[in-house]
Length: 143
Image 1 (tube, rainbow, N blue to C red):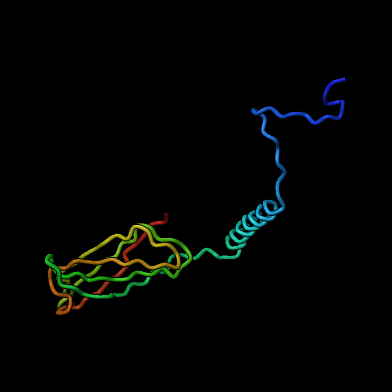
Image 2: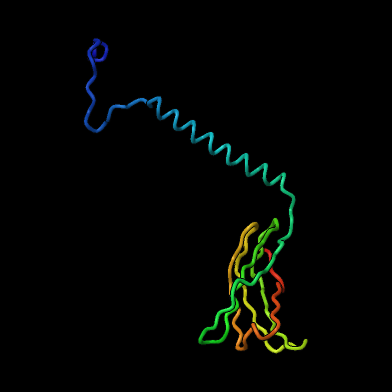
């Protein structure tokens, strides 16, 4: 009869560690993690189905005009209240005097996600405070 048949405990070799069972706490933590993953996936699926596709809705507002060594910096905030992201968003500004355009400046906002804001600036050589300033969005691309 071999040693294992005799009812004596088997010895483990140093190269084979004894197997430990999973503790109840580990099972609880694994279950919570699994539920969080399932909930995140369910949220994304419901959001994708329920949210209608809306284009970007971009608005501009001037936040300040500052004198710099290179001219005048017109700082602005651009907001996207729409349901899609705008990439390569072109913002331009014009300075007018008596209806005639005397200077223009433009900038590209690389990425404007939905429901977000970014800040930027346009540089002019003439003082925007003395002229009529207008900003507008010229266009964007889909990312």
